Image (cartoon, rainbow, N blue to C red; front, side, top):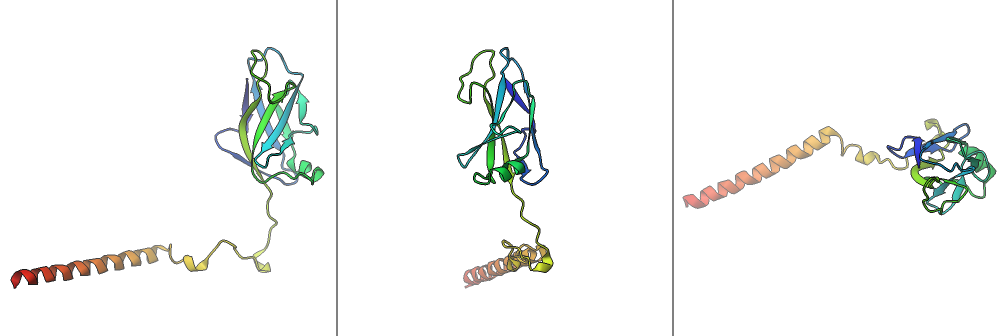
Length: 177
């Protein structure tokens, strides 16, 4: 059985595809009697492609390894025809029997429990060069302001209180007649 230890699995980890940003995946193996000769580590992504993880072009590492360090920027630079997606991927670890190997007592079962995401940062653009927020709308900035909300609520209460007073006045007049 293989248990992922790094990164923690409490939430999806996000990794930047940039120079010097290495990703370390770690695991513990237990209850394995037949030690694998090699492990294959790959990232299966939502775009339907899989990418080898680690220093080897095929994603193979020694069978007794408990971690792999991956440089996604170096991979992306070397494989520009198949760029890494900016998406959620699943880390898959298997022995030499492949990912489709069935469970067998004493052997390593393929592990696909870890999900992680990758993104490419956008280049910095200074405000002085004319940068503007594409999703911001200055017209709506007053709508959420507390003073604006208080004013709208106050006017709403005044309007309906006035209607109630007018209605009660008409009801009293009808009963007096």
